[in-house]
Length: 353
Ligand SMILES: CC(C)(COP(=O)(O)OP(=O)(O)OC[C@H]1O[C@@H](n2cnc3c(N)ncnc32)[C@H](O)[C@@H]1OP(=O)(O)O)[C@@H](O)C(=O)NCCC(=O)NCCS
Image (cartoon, rainbow, N blue to C red; front, side, top):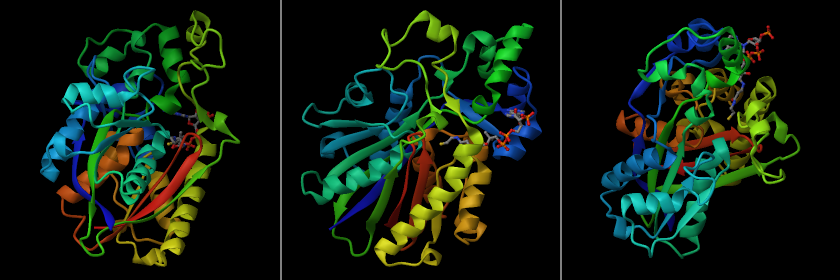
């Protein structure tokens, strides 16, 4: 018995924000963003549109694609690091929004940029256990709530542009290494048990190393603090993520290839047998670096970061969906998903279409 993806869908906001729009807010250039990250544009959610809203759009589309009704789903897994509420997670928000029967349990997982990858392995494990036959897996994140909207960001989504004060411009510039990289988006898949030959999930290798959490984390708003959030933390901008870009880059281009080799070894296949390597979209140079480290030709390593930026748990399901839609994913292919993100969590999973 195998776990098979029978449908996919995406939920991306309508607001397309090109690099040029960000150059009006901070000391950056279109060229810097494009050449250092590969990103040309990203999507920003409307006010009131959170990861649960985008996830619901993706989930409805995935269900329609799989031709499944809500009643036919046995459980939901929602991967996000940016839920609508601190608690509960997005599972119950999605349940109420979409009208899932209360008999369908919802699991909330995080794992940041590796959220969808971890969710895939969890979905497969739950199916293999025999407990559930059909799961809905959503990966969704919104990064715009991390942005300092009081510093003139409304202009990016159609609000009036205004002259920024030197202090506002300086503050936006102080976080430019992060804000230019991220966008909002969601993807979802339906995963079902199947006896359809070789098709389906083959193996996963997942890893965690918490020895350098500070490489990518949110320093404020945590439950070691009393109170967990206060005015001073906000003034010190501690709810904004901190990232050691070069360190994360280095980890990404070594850990992802290692995990791809590990999962291929576990499954008894060669890396060269991979038809399509779906790499978490954090930086085009990382995506290309991972492909190069594995000696895979560029046509086997698709990317869409130029249009979405990094949508964290959303990148892999959005990329998967687009590759199915444009025919790059064909029946019988060996696909490998790989991701790395805050934690650090990383890994790879093999899947036969
Ligand atoms: C963040 C990242 C794009 C920076 O690229 P880089 O080539 O490593 O750039 P560096 O950090 O060496 O910075 C080079 C210069 O660009 C500047 N810079 C940073 N962001 C900038 C921006 N948006 N616009 C213009 N200049 C910028 C830096 O201040 C630095 O200036 P300095 O040399 O005067 O100090 C890159 O390190 C990266 O993508 N890291 C991984 C991030 C990631 O994947 N995060 C999510 C993980 S899931």
